[in-house]
Image 1 (cartoon, rainbow, N blue to C red):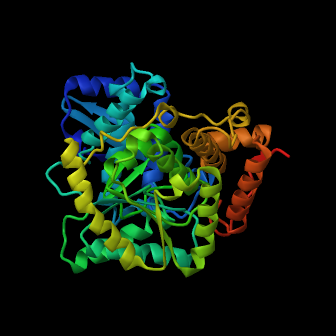
Image 2 (cartoon, helix red, strand yellow):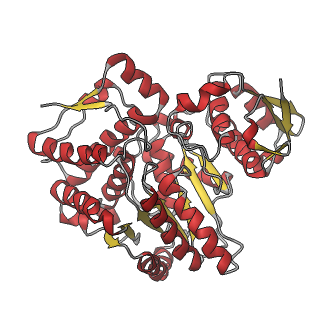
Image 3 (cartoon, helix red, strand yellow):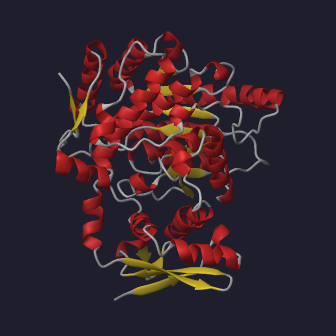
Length: 451
């Protein structure tokens, strides 16, 4: 049996006795298994898997304990994966990520243990998102606006991955920071490219932020480039953290997860209170992805209308133009935030309706009751479509939902006939293009569209 004890780093290096006592209490409840699984995911940083069974099964004898002291806590690892070590020493990045898990799952969990965060109103959710980011030292008010969030699929081919690196490289040359969902594919590529761009510019302050949530991190372990890992309580708070913390969005090809993210931000920006918001959104891929973005654009246009289409720009096969367009918008963002007295690094003025903040638990009942009616108000339709795609993501990669599908069969999805046809076309294109699972993995749909 191999044991290793780790001294805390970052914000966890100095805790009050009250905080230590709270963590001691939280570690004794049902969070422990989640904490253990997230630690194991971090120890498998860089693994090219999206199957939590395949990730966890070789390490059934792995365990993690907390050792409390007067001034803080230590993490004790029992039988950790050998590939997390170099010459017997745990890699520094992995160690940092382990304490990020402790910070966000247990420390923050203890802080809000008396509050049912699933029932908070929109303003309370925003405060929680801000508090988690602030506690992680992610919000740096002394710096210039330069954060670019990159969304895209974890299951992309080598050509598409290379394009994400090229875009990241151009962003890095312009001294822009990168934030992604922290996993592989389009989440890793921009970070990898940016590291080279930053190095060429001798820019040593480059940031590589990965924002995830407990149900995702087990299926998509952090890639090794992530320098700041934040684990939000659920997908809705993860999405809010992205859009309030960023200054621009770049969206690469992806599957239902990427569609969920796009529908989220479009639904948010369609609210009348956000008509003056400055948040550039660029959809981009190489020349062979032109048909993919045409299909996405057509779906958005036919469901949410031209107003939604006007919120983004599509740039094909031109990484330099993508980066230049974003760089050119940063002064507008700064000017707008200054004019309304808003923070440069946390967009308080962005209005996010409760339909986008309340956690959606995908079950057979909740998925069948989604209001997929094209006649409803566009922001409401975007919220319902976002929930649909979120449920499919969960059915594809989140272990509890995967088990639910195994036990009770695929989700049944109902929609009006015209919308159903559009959904069927889009979802089938994701399946045909291999965007639902990693290459080499057969995809078994977790949903059925009612006929």
